[in-house]
Image (cartoon, rainbow, N blue to C red; front, top):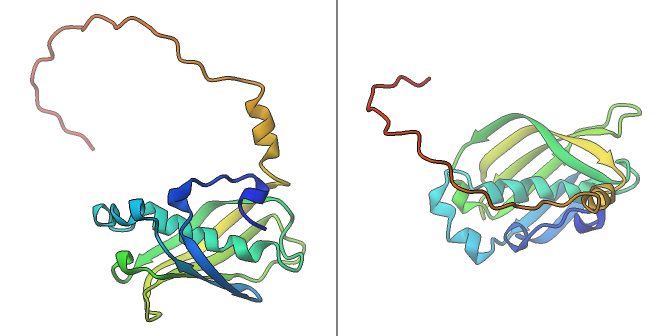
Length: 171
């Protein structure tokens, strides 16, 4: 099941998984970052798109052999995130789904790693919790037809006056 099939429409910058290998409750995803994302890697310690791609790899495990309930799962919690190396060198994402508790298909837990080209661990995300939201995001799409975002032009407010310089202590 692709992410689009359950109602998630990712733009081109978030489509960086070029190949997947699966077995049982484990997946290895080869990452191929879009040029626009690769150009911004130096701005981040851990680029949010790279982490998102790693999390996306878990989706390849969800609907195999009736393991998970059909529909949409979203990440809602993470136990820990460890950075062991340079995430800019990530070539693969490796994910392992934890064994399910009896009768539990609404919350799934996985561990995800970003690996370099030689298989060295760069980043570990342990205890990624995925929550089932329903059959698909169709309900969200239908709800969008019930309301509309409309910007109304408003006149600019008059400035309240000059701000006097002062010392601030912000926690």
